[in-house]
Structure formats: structure tokens, C-alpha cells
Image (tube, rainbow, N blue to C red; front, side, top):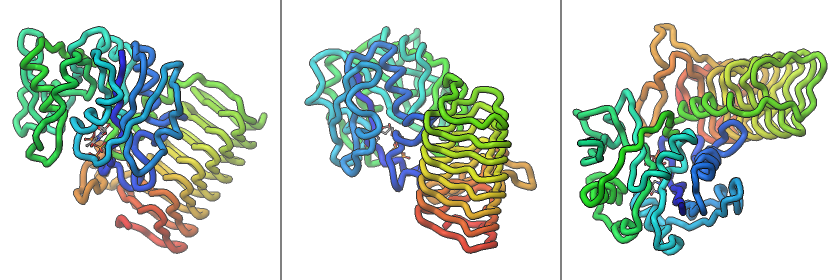
Amino acid sequence: MQTVVLAAGSGTRMRPLTETQPKPTLPVAGRPLIGHALSGAAAAGASRFIIVVNPHTSAVEEAIGETVDGVPVEYVTQTEQRGTADAVAAALDALDPEPFVVLNGDSLYDEASLAKLYASTPAVGSFRVDNPSSYGVLTVTDGRVTDVVEKPTDPESNLINAGGYALPTEVQQWLDVPESERGELEFTDVLLRVCETFDVTPVSFDRWLDVGRPWDLLAANEWKTPEVEPTIEGTVDDDATLSGNVHVAPGATVRSGVVIDGPAYIDTGATVGPNAYIRGTTYVGPDAKVGHAVEVKNSVLMAGATVGHLSYVGDSILGCDTNLGAGTKIANLRHDGQPVQLTVKGERVSTGRRKFGVVLGAGAKTGINTSLNAGLTLSPGAATTPGEVVTRDR
Ligand code: TTP
């Protein structure tokens, strides 16, 4: 079935990472986030992809190209980020007058659940969560979706709209919706009409992840990295010890004395060591460098990130081309044992993680012996001085 994939959002909750690249291109287990949804959809029965992209960047096109697993990909542009209904409407000219699937390009889905969605038109993907008030909550009556309420204060169930729809052809005429209270043209309003007109099946997803905030990127890598075939294609010194699921991509180098407790993904051109220790679920991006006697735990190091010798990086995301001076230490635990908080769109929000470090925007640099407190972000290009103790975002 033809499939529209939404990838034109601004990703404001994912800042500072999305100040320099679109969210669907952030790395998850060695490929762009959106690539996982596309591969899952290709296996589930997508016949062609129409990806809706933002006009300010060609990064999604460059990351995905013209086919995914043999399924052709076209791109259409949403001129302004006016909402999800507007994003689907941007694909109208490219759609054939046939049923279609819509997926969010920033969610992870499991393949079997997507297959159920593709086989059940009209259908909406659903998932049970602990915090339904943050989502669109579904009312299901006699096995059919009868209502969708956006972000209710008093949700009537924990079954939420997971942003995946298999839709009849008629819906292509229903995308022109009025602005919502939040000032957006929301697909929820289209979905309500679909539910009034058709018997819509709530396809229950076994596994699903909305990658909205920085710590969701860690969760995404924790999900997908163990699924990567553990292959050693790069150069690994005889003296290095690799255990668990470790993928070393072509052109990557793991030097003497390195210990990697997988799951880990060491991408093309990256170098690790000598004598470094990598544990937790860790991604070391293309051309990234993990220096001598560095420990990296449960972190994402994006392309070109460099961690100088004698540093510690825990539960953190280092943006592209960041550079940690020697001896940089990242705290990832509060003394009171409470979940670490991070500022998202100006508000302190719990990451839900007892262990969480920092998020560094592209090109941020630390001077030697910098200490970064748990739960802070550095903007793209920000810098610290040698020996600095950083306790606030900058
Ligand atoms: P959201 O998660 O609502 O928005 P976002 O991804 O831009 O993130 P944030 O809220 O942090 O700013 O979007 C859901 C999906 O729809 C996501 O895949 C992005 C996509 N989208 C568009 O393509 N165009 C739009 O105008 C909007 C609002 C979202």
C-alpha cells in the first residue's frame, strides 16, 4: 500500500540536537531514525513511500535516497510546519486515488505490528502507556475506535494513538481541517471523521516508541542496537576484548586494550582506544574518536564526536563534531537518587531515568578537566574553559 511518512516537523523538544539536523536523521543503531520505520513498513507491505520533508534542509533525502529495501521513495515538501493534517495534505498530489497508510517518521514500530496495521484498513495503531495525558487517547467501543481526545487531563484509558493509520481513499478529500485550539491543523480531526464514518480497528502495537525528547534517542538505540547482526567488519586489535552484541563497521578501528561490553555499534571510520572501556548500549558514530583510557557508558556519540583521553561519558548524547577535552567528566546520577531532569522547551522535565548525563549540540567543546552536571544541555558551538564546573545549560 502507498505510504506517507511524516518527516517535516521542527523537533523542538529534541533541541539542541535538532538545531542542526532534522529529528528523523538522528542516529539509531547505525542508521537514521526514520530508516527503521521505512524498513518495517517495507516488510509490512508498503508499495511506495512519499516522505513529507521540511523545506529548510535536504538531510532526510540525503540520508534515505531513492529506495528503501527495494521500495521506491519520493519526497514532497510541507512549506510551513502547520500541523500533521497539513503535512499529509502536502502528499496529496503524489498520492494515487487508493487507500494509503500514514506513519510518523520519528517513531519506532515493530515489524509484526506494522504488518497487522497494513492488513486492517481502516485502522489506527494503538499502544498502552503509563502517561496517556501526553498523547491522543482512544475510546474503543465494541472493538471500534469511537473517539480520540488530545492530551486529556483525565484520560479515560491508557490506550493512545500511536501515529500510524491505514486509511480508505475517501480520506484524501478530508484533510482540509480547521485550526485546533493549539493553533495547528491536526490529523486527529481527520481521524475523528474517519471514526464517525467507518468501523476503525484499533490495531494494538506490541512495541512502539515515540522519539520526541533526547532521552528517547537513548531508548531508541537501546531497542534497536541489540537487533543488529554482531559483525566485525573493521579492524579489531587481537588485544581488544569484545563481548555481547558488538558491530564494528567497515573502516572502524578498535585498538589494543579496549574492552567493549555490547550491545554496541562502532560505525565507519570511528576509532576506539587504546585502553578504552565501552559498555551499556553505546553507539560510536562515523569518524568519531574515543581516546585512550576513556569510559563510555550507554551513550550516543554522533558523527565526528571526539572524546579526549581520561574522560567519562555516561548516559549522554554527544552531537556531531563535539569535542571533549581530556579529563572531561559527565555526571549521570543525582545524590537524591531521583530521576534526572532536563530542560525541554523551557521547562524542567523528568527524563524518567535515574542515570542520565548531558546532551551536547553539534560542535560543542569542553576544555580539559571540565565537569558537566547531570541533566544539562550545551547549545551547538558552546564551549567551556579548562577546569570549569558546568551546572547550567548554555
Ligand atoms: P510532532 O511530534 O507533533 O512534532 P515534531 O516532531 O516536530 O516535534 P516537536 O513537538 O518536538 O516540535 O509531530 C508528529 C509527526 O508529524 C512527526 O513525525 C513530525 C510530523 N510533522 C510534520 O511532518 N509536519 C508538521 O507540521 C508537524 C507539526 C509534524
